[in-house]
Length: 113
Length: 114
Image (cartoon, rainbow over all chains, first blue to last red; front, top):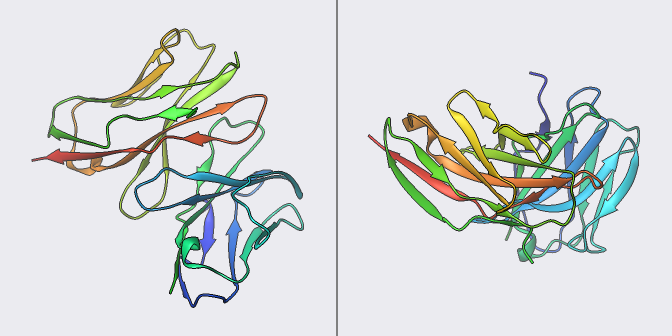
């Protein structure tokens, strides 16, 4: 399978704990996105990477959130001191310079209890 | 202002009939793309169809077609011959080509009845 891969698929954590999610984009896709989706809503943009450079961050991305893409391949999204409001689906997507559409992974569903 | 507006939270359609899902958008850019994605209960976002702002013909992909009315800033998705497997959430999205991020609407939940 050469699609976008996200790990884990599900994460349950206690409030205040740190969590980290991983995204492996489609091979050779240099552009990578993180989105957050709450129940009944459309995905909301969090951040965008072109290769290893983080070029855009949403105001939704508070200082508790950090994303990296150290070698321009996989990316991680870390949430520190999780809050119940962080409960959501976290979606990763990638695209190449030649593609107009983005390809999404299956998401990581985070539940903060 | 919302970049993408989907005014139908839910829709029902009889199997084998056609259905139109509405989408309007807001941009002052001349160069942009419009997209439709399907999200089944499993959660993944599946790309369906793309329309560029400069494309003169409406896009079609199998049973999917995009009714693009540029002056009205609408990009409705038409699904012909609905199937039970079409039951899912459908999201309209836009990307302005001077920028990189995609804007999504709030979605329409489609239920196909047997």
